[in-house]
Amino acid sequence: MSAHPRSILFVCLGNICRSPLAEGVMRQKVRQAGMEERFFLDSAGVGAWHVGNRPDRRSEAVGALHGADLSDLRARQVGLDDFYQFDLILAMDHSNLGDLEAMRPDNATAQLALYRAYCGEGALDVPDPYYGGDHGFEEVYQMIAKGSDALLAEAL
Ligand code: 4NP
Image (cartoon, rainbow, N blue to C red):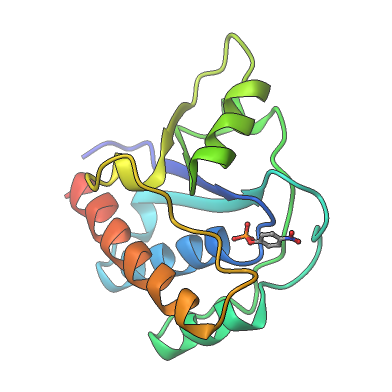
């Protein structure tokens, strides 16, 4: 077992829908597995529109429905420091990945990848549910629950 915790940053556009759900669900699964010492988790947005805000109420609701409490999370924007602070930065969709690649410093140490591709699902997006209905949030939850299981399995 590595003494160094695995640090993962989840990134979407606004840091109020997908990436806080990815952080909250991963926290829940890590806690259930008794592996809190092994992970350092955070989330951030490419954009700054929602900095300081709680997650979207639909993300909080779908998280709560499945036992993940997102109420303490607050949105922040990705910064250049993140490319050195984290082992792994996971983008929720191709657009987020493109934005991260464009700002990535040449000597960045973080590995950058598409969330679902990294989790073994192929080069697929976690689609932005912001302008859709509640069903979109449940779909996002299901993708994230699967992804979180894969991230956890990697550490076992
Ligand atoms: P997220 O969803 O990237 O999953 O947090 C969005 C939240 C807000 C906006 C877009 C996507 N927005 O345009 O304000």
